[in-house]
Image (cartoon, rainbow, N blue to C red; front, side, top):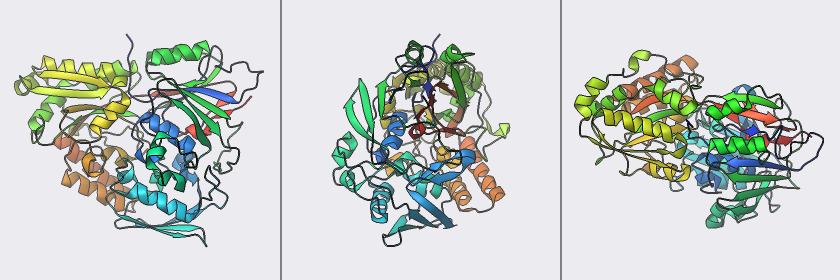
Length: 518
């Protein structure tokens, strides 16, 4: 049976890249030279405006077109992108030196004024960026640009210790003045002067392919602690493909150089010495309840508990990952600092007790098509408990738009979590804090004042133990309230054919590090 999973095949941090082909890839002849890399997406990007990126495919293309101030490096460290130096004065005050050689794709210098204008739009609640609360929390930022000294000073109205990490998010990428002057064209990818990154969008054919061209004038490559080897591709070609089995087949047939698999198709690359493999398991899955007035679970913790009593995380994990994942005890994986390890906080399975509560309850389930079989498992478990269930599996873009806007059109969301930052607050903000309709990441609609106060206290803490204690209090709060039901990790494998490479930083995959080594 083919098990599908949510995350984008070529997504940053989430989806694993597979660089391969018959015995290599579309460019598999080790003696041949090429300037093109062929890759896969799961679906069409929803927008080429990085600030509005929401889905995994958006997170893949944004770093190619737009540079961030900081980038991820090995060991959880940060390295300069458009910023050459940076300083955290305290949790509320930061200073960044902007490198002097960076230019937009139309030749416009990327000055502190350009940076501050782009960050100001990113930070504005009216913009509605899903990354805003990750970078700033609930704080209001102020940006002061000084072109003479080349610096941008940032002041937050409240402390948020993840601010610098937030500047490595795709959504925080710098949009050049031409893009800010034409937001409609920016979203469509048609403003050629909008780009601050290494590539420009050459052509876009939805459902067919997207072509990117390397800029001849680009020189702002990061100085990673371990230098990149090889040559950047002059051309990147993305093809939307929605099935892992199809992606694996095309990789092995030589039609693709890069792709990704997370289910039983991983075994198709086992013991093949024509490939190198990397694995990442920070991606998690969990059930989120819609607690807005008018939904089935609003003000009904006993009903939410009953759902938790019916769902077996191990069975769910086996279905979505071909038994490669493992159950989790929070919304983050065991690899993330300060994650819950207290099994007593997890609602134990008790289908018989759940049936007494769920009988006849109407429940609408939504999830992404890359978790279709997991969605169906959840639906069937609830039906066995007597619930009247409707389940819909939507493509990534439609699913993200539906669950990310608020509203009362769903009751349960089977969430696939791309933790781009690799931090616990990134996932905790899905279940507490400002709701999606107010510019936050919280899809449940329930702020959870106690939990969010603990999360905020942790983000203001300097001492590591104090921060973890606060984060564990926040986790205990949402688990006791049953705002979410932890399910499982979804491991991805990165496979690189001879002649190609891409850099993985811990659990984070950076598409702008794709190199040709022939």
